Length: 329
Image (cartoon, rainbow, N blue to C red; front, side, top):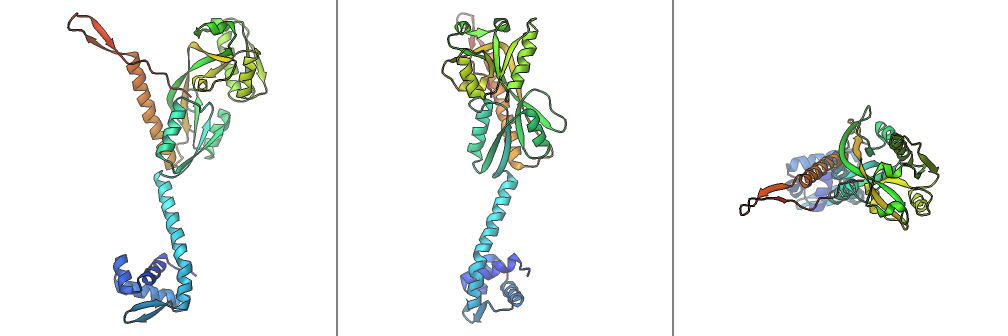
């Protein structure tokens, strides 16, 4: 039996107002339309829903049972329509996010915190994994967006560079290099490194081989079957040094210290499918672009302070704010 929603709406309104005329006024239609549609519904059901009289209408016993079940059904349909509208506008829904680094601080942390604050009805689901796994999931529409290192856009995807992040060396607090405020590759020429077998360990391994080999040195790198937290503990035990991204320095580990590796920066970008029509994803991308542009402007202002002339002495006075920390993962 196919019952139109309009029929249900008219019957519920008539039951609430005990009158076809008053129901018609509330809905904004002619009384004859209410009366005709309810008669059609009664003919379809094969039972009278209302007793008509000069003062209005009253539900029959069958009508009371029908309205009792029809009212919550209409409420559920209305709720479903509202949710669909919210998801369609991006104000509600789900965004599946692939991550390849820490959420403890930096650009990505600020981005996702801001997004969740502005769109509290959108749920963000996070998945850690290798870049290749994230890209495959994006192409299969199992993931909406991934934040990865690198500056190239994979085939079949869209991408945009959002921020860069400095590289830090992790070493024991009692290491001789801990006395230096910053390090260069030459300081690391003969040092032993440890990396995790899990991501981003393989990428750090390749990064170390590339740069240390340029110094004419065969790097000493040990792969460890541990996660990041335990890898940091191994560093504190003196098993070796490792590298990490700037955002991860927001978390400290006993017995370890971070030292900046001068001149090394990692580009980070967002990767997504151009065929993904998730409105909540589009809002996340829009916010990411705005925040990235703002950070670039602030970093540029810090690097190039405004110079004004001192009219009294004729000297140039450089006015600038304290340099801002570069955004990172």
